[in-house]
Image (cartoon, rainbow, N blue to C red; front, side):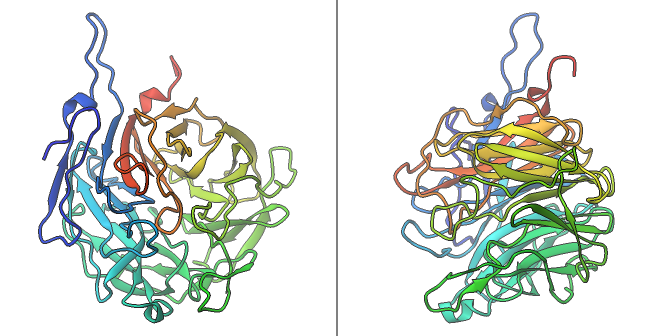
Length: 447
């Protein structure tokens, strides 16, 4: 099926998949017509990936095959319409072989549970894709013991193995990371139901998983369900890894980087400091997680590993209407920053390095508009913001469950940005959106 020019509407098959569905976009959305005597300037490509007005699709993520940058994999949640609190079955899963111009949807490997929650995706240096999700269902009792599971694809996202069960328990903030230097895969989930966050490591490309290791930091308790005791460790932890160096970050009065060189068995706590050596105060403002529907929910601070240099990590801290980025090149011993990104009304931000050390940051607003910036000097400075959607869209019923984060991924040519908005049902439900942005749009003339 072909998307309609102007709105980029994707036609997808039903949630209970019996066959793949092909999504495509016409070239009119991707390349601008050149004026006589001037070169063609590539435009931003924007696609509504899910386009199901009666369902909620949130927290989309996309990754790029480093062996074949034309090959992408995209995931998102698929939740009941408001006020439903549970996924309906499969998560959304699709792959592309032309840098996101067209997409093929494929079945999500559910395994022995009927529903998929909180999906995430990663890829290793060999081009093996991994997807992670919470097992959900068949009832609330089962959810207390359901696990985080991981599947993999060896053929660019076309087919997926049945899920492998990790020792991690269903979590409010599961994530997946791959060390592209060592090939190890790192899953983040619950040490207990929901919280606190722990990491489990696979050294054989996701086939077996090690014992969960608690990720350090504050352990505040929240009531997730009236039928369950308080869960301690809210809001969970982010994770980044490269070259065998595993890091997370947390905050109390100041921001702390937690560093492990033995896959989470032991940790060293180091203060995140500004370039002048002063400890960074805890983040502030509306991006601080709150345990309520529609509130901010992603763990902070955000962390990312630079795959172009071992020991270089970025930490992003919310500061009211700004995002502050601090960078270390020696795994937390010394720091530069902050690089300050003005991001008024930011919601669901994300930050990540590309393979050559470019650092991307994105956020959406409550309007909804989506913005992104790119650093070409490993996080010391950033471009002006680029708006990556054509039209301001309704917010619909944003927030958790099913809408905890957005995403950005970079290669040598593009920033791939994903978020959710209510463009197909402005009163209620979210759709998952994909945007491909040429890196040339972030560069200053002559840079």
